[in-house]
Image (cartoon, rainbow, N blue to C red):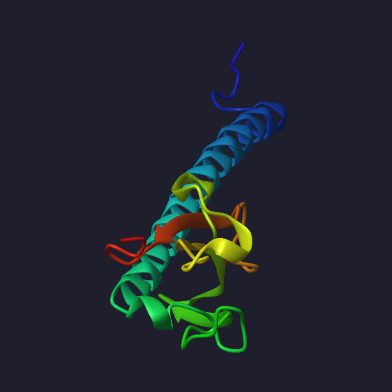
Length: 147
């Protein structure tokens, strides 16, 4: 009984199918890791943009902290689009005067009804996959306003 030593066609097909299953699994794992890294990079870029926006606001005089056409008025653009590392972000800045009840004076008797300004910066990326908007809120107040 002299038989040819080698693989049959069925054995080759089964081996190829097993290889394809493992290759597809490895590719999907690579794609998931790449997506996670890209998402982390986008979040870091958004955090840098929020920090830069707050630095700009922090260096303004208190009376100038506000948005163009807003109340309070100021030089800050309310909605702007910025491109960083070929990624487009939309930055929405909101500034609101707050009369804090801590000073004990509310309404008409308060000489300085704007005790501080509440600043909210929202950063969105519509082209980024799995990107939740980054929202940062802070207070801006002058020194010794109530004294």
